[in-house]
Each structure stands twice: as structure tokens, then as C-alpha cells.
Amino acid sequence: MTGREWMRPALYGMVALALLLGVYALVLVLVSGGEFLRAQLAQFWYFVLALAVGFGVQVSLYTRLRQVARHDSGSGKVVAVSGGTSTAAMISCCAHYAANVLPVLGATGLVALVAQYQTELFWVGIAFSLAGIVYVGRKLAAATRHMAQMESHA
Image (cartoon, rainbow, N blue to C red):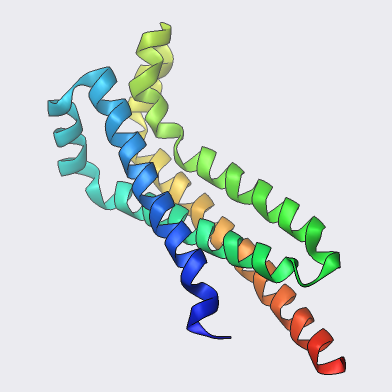
């Protein structure tokens, strides 16, 4: 495996990380203002960064898995399953952001509950992100081994 094979996945991962941080900042600014964004980042920057990096890593792994799967006709199911897992992990890890959007929808009780458990939700999000990374990473490793075996028999 060469570094060149990882250039596109790494780029996609960095773009995904930046987009996630941008969307997070935009939602907080639009819903609660710039001061709230600064306060959240000052208090929870390490959680936000961990979730964004986790998402970027998942996108990188998924992108690389798709590259490998193009060479192996049997990997289409793997790509679909791993994509679903990554999506579920990202939705789970971003659940705490709902605390900032739900007031607009009139769900004050739910907002209070989510806000009360914000740190716990961050940890749950990180756990799901790590689970997604492990899952997609294993699928990528298996697909890569399978591709190498096919190439050695050709």
C-alpha cells in the first residue's frame, strides 16, 4: 500500500472534518449567537475536536474502502454496511447539537434534558465514532487482504 493510495481518502477526511466544524459553528451562531459558540468551544473544545476528527477518520476509511471495493466485485455489500454504520455513528455523536436547535422547534423539556446530559452525550458520541472507525477499519483490512489475495492468484 502506498501513500498515494491514501491521498484522496485523507483529503476527503480533512474536508469532512472542516465541514462538520463549519456546520457546528454555523448552527450555534444562527441559533444561539457567537458568544454561545465561543463559550461552547471554550468549555467543550476537546469533545468537539474529537468528534470532528473521528468523523474525518471515518470518511477517510470509508473512501479508501470504496477504492478497494472497486477492484473487488464482492465488496459492494461491505461498502453499504460500513457506510450505514458510519452514518449511524455520526448521527449519534451529533445528538448533543440538538440541544441548540430544539428550542426553535418548541421542545423545551427535551432541550433541558439534553443540556443536562451534554457531557455524557459527548462521550456516547465518541464511543460511537470509535466503534464506527473500528468497524470500517476492519472491513477495509479484510477487503484489502482479499484484494491482495486475488492479485497474487492472477
